[in-house]
Image 1 (spheres, rainbow, N blue to C red):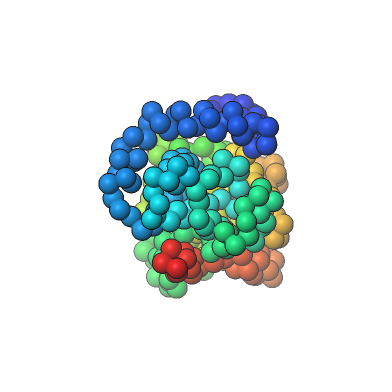
Image 2 (image 1 turned 90 degrees about the horizontal axis):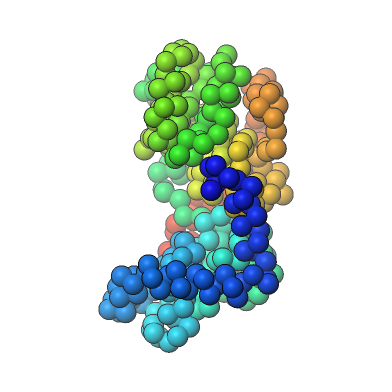
Length: 307
């Protein structure tokens, strides 16, 4: 639905975020979860856990419902919201503590009726490899990049959605690191063009190195991608935001002066060239990104879990 019928997804997302739809929607979810989540329920009943940590609304609903029924009287439920905005689908009875990305996220949850003392701002959990200082020159040499050149990281989703080829063509004179995810067809087409300024990869497991070698990141606005980029103080330009959760992420970042969105492809290319030509503008954008970054999110989350 997201890839082929995004407008339909937007209608579904917005409709399920309304108060009047919650009784119908929650009833349907409970039936769905009852059919599909039997093994999880059995695991929790037999586990004797002190704390359950969820990072997805489906597991939150299952565990929260069990807590509300008194089936897990000695278990705390801690839920991590993994976007910067928040949808009502995350709300569930039985949650003891919500851990969220930002003060904005906290205010949104409070407006939905969650008690403020049940919400803590920790940041989204971040693999600590993204917080390690790295030698950019060494990474450039390892990746075969031109040294000391303005570099753009162009990253799509794992499905390879987005106008990657069009952006690569508009920026054919710029040094690009292009990630195509699992879209092998797109990977083959871009590699066949053999632009010497473009390093093209499929699905990667060294994103921390690629971010350390970049000056600006062009990406879809997923919660984790944003969190990793902020930790690396990368200015962000967004494309192809999924209506709903990703559009919400864009709104929150824009309120903090971070990221560019709703631009045509030529406007995106022009913004990249403006960054390349103006070091002061690049520094200002980096400072804005670092202001919202929470590189110690894992330690904060663990503190609240153990608390």
